[in-house]
Image (cartoon, rainbow, N blue to C red; front, side, top):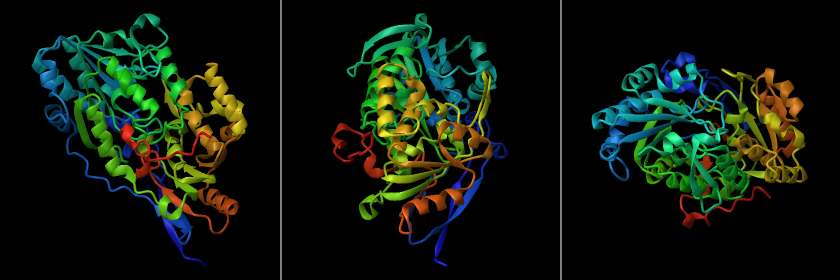
Length: 475
């Protein structure tokens, strides 16, 4: 028998609200899958060297507000403000807002600012329920808001009267901003900095798509999601650049961005002016999770095995972003094995199965270059809503060039079959099929935390970096 290496793949799931609302590890479902990979075939098993978590996220937030990486302290910004918009992310993001808001509220009270609007950046996603809000904001913070007469708002993208027109970005995006944010003297966003297939999350992304109108969201997403230069690491790519420009147009003053490790723990809090503080947060994220690419030495691999870690949610729609990261190191014609339990989620508006919203690609199956042209035409005709298409369309595009095999719970298999997705409950079965497909000499890479991980040579923080990475996707 040939030598093998046993690899351990995280196979996790958790309601992201629980990540930020509790330190009780018993509420966090953590499982692993194990696989024996022929040692001769294994090119890389990429594991980040994660720093220790901060001892106290609230204390770290206090320190960050007083020690900006760029620009004035938060107290200095508050000195001239009569009103403040504090923009937090929604129930599908694991940012521990309940632990960060006390530091912001302390500073606001110390400055004597009486008009405070806490706004949920839910974009076109349905608003948080009362229970969601209690977990996200925290009971003590909500009581403090009520005692001070501070208001709470959520994005309402279909209500044209809820927005103020700001202008048109250089990329052609018309901008309507939520009234409560538009009229505030000082604007701060609180979010999670991470790499993603739009370039990066956090910072100005809480403005667009967070608190802008339907027209603004769809214009940006329709124009830039499918660009070959919108990819993991492309901070200066067209989509992220438009987002940050729009945030500047909207008067975003400063951002607080946390970096969460693969257990959902805060390892860093970065505060400062927009967009500089968010750029620094992404640099720090990349220092942990970007890896030296094995492609220059070994070439793109035939098979990538991707894991899912708890902070990425109950739905494949959210866990599956790593398909676009794995795409960067897997050759066309190769296989991405994506392990994601995806047990689904119950919400105030109903229950969502684990593959919810992935069924939006069903009319375009099988994934072929010809059918991808149909997708592009329907995006242009606005027949595809890109608030959801911004995720399933990039996954679909990868599937036109690579085989996606999903390892998931048995309850998802019927829906996967109905959509036309290749799914199984067995990692061994998926790997054996991939080896049969690619042969005994297939090169294999393991990306245990695929949604966070990206090859370092894909990182483009400024326009000067544009030559660094020639992306072959979206052909």
